[in-house]
Length: 154
Image 1 (cartoon, rainbow, N blue to C red):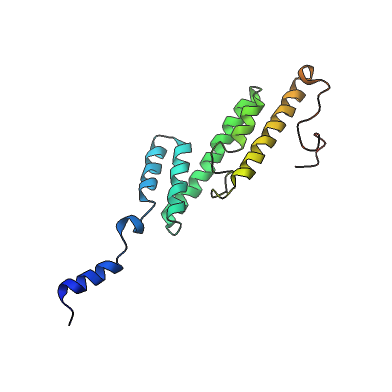
Image 2 (cartoon, rainbow, N blue to C red):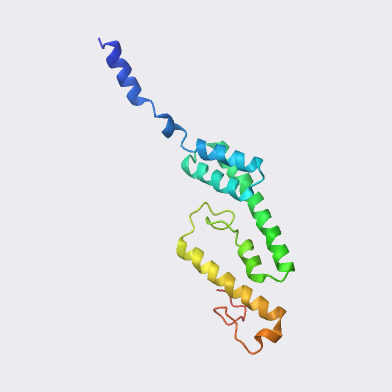
């Protein structure tokens, strides 16, 4: 028969360490704290990290999904305000989500090259919008868009 000490050691080997069992707990708590302070961007980032670390935990997924939409609404509102003030470049940055993980709905899987391409495209659109709003500043200049501003997509 196994000694009590050996049996305890064997059972302890099968129990997951606490840090592994709830890897996203710390980020989730930070997300809650940020949300209480109305820091939507920080809450989004923390909930995303918690969800990525523990994707099987529905609490983290629900918090992330909820905050994803709040973050998108926040950046849309900021973008509209900047657009109304004539800051088209700033508006495009806000419309792009403003966070490093990609657009709402992207779970952080967007590659850096794709994000860089979107940033360049957004800058080109902003420059074209600026020229359209103030034709006296950009008269005769060609569009910065890949298709020359003809609407063929990118």
